[in-house]
Length: 253
Image (cartoon, rainbow, N blue to C red):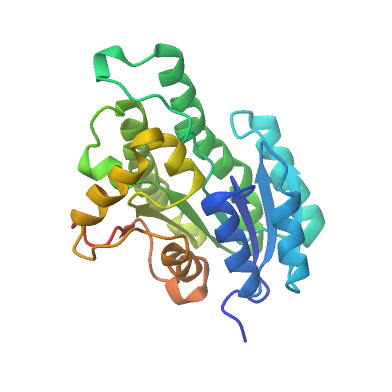
């Protein structure tokens, strides 16, 4: 029996990068996956179906509560319930770094709207279906940037630090409903988003990042999927309110 047999999982930001990797890995472990993104998830769904898995998708703007509600309703319509939410969608790759006093105000507001409010709205959308299912698992994606204090990206840092606080607060509220809420904090993963974030400095950044870790290589998507599967599965049934760092030993909580 696979680890996620009979589970239904929503993954946001699933069109590419980490979100797609999470969706495909969960499907391989037996989950029915509902892939969501502002962009098309057709390729993600096709890859899952080709491999013998079950998946559907919906275009979802997590900045809109009505879009998040429709996401949850469509997932229930497609698969009958919701067991897992992976809150992966975030603004990251296209952000322009700067000293904190020089950050663009419109960018700041957009980051808070997606990276904080969007996470909150997705959780609101799925919590009643999870209660109806008898419990569930919410997995919020934070970042090493939040605990390390990445310079020249205070908007992103603040948003991901907020995700940790939200995870802890929601865990205390939802424990009685048997809904677990945990966060996963990766260092810089080798995805399109990270390459976009560092731009022409990407190759140098890879070396600097690896040298600051106890495990001195760059983080790959497959290094994260095991933690996601564990937190989605019944193996973590007594784990909630925690931030799980997957960062090669960059930071100890």
